[in-house]
Amino acid sequence: IVDKDGNPSTDANDFVNGGGHVPFGGHKGYALMMATEFLGRIFTGADAFVDSKHGGPIMRHQGVTFIAFKADLFQPFSDYANRADEMGRRVRAIPPAPGFDEVLMPGDPEVRTRANRQRDG
Image (tube, rainbow, N blue to C red; front, side, top):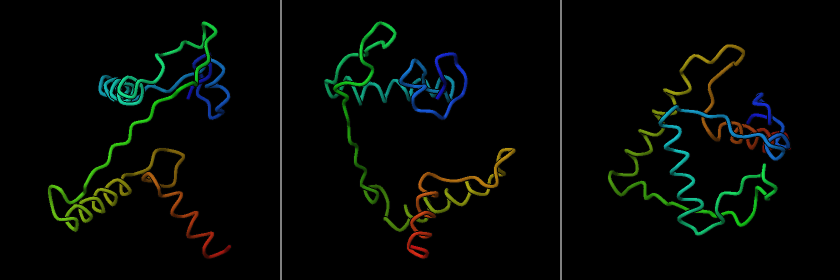
């Protein structure tokens, strides 16, 4: 996120106090944002966008859309699982950005935390 002045931040309070999301993906990221807004707000009938700078609350009557995928609908599940594993291996093999030790996939930190807690209590 960024704070109200556009500076990078990891403090969630900065978002609530006039900050915003960090843009990503250029024109494709914009389209992903629009799809998310459509599915999460317009499709569900949730409140219209409220601009917090004009005194309205930023979080109220939020909509949620769940989308379920059947992994074996187009191919055997084992093929899907193998391809997903291969994708994870390829992503993790990418050289990390300066200042980082490795590239992680979504869920990697949680898997490690669970293993550590099962092992160490």
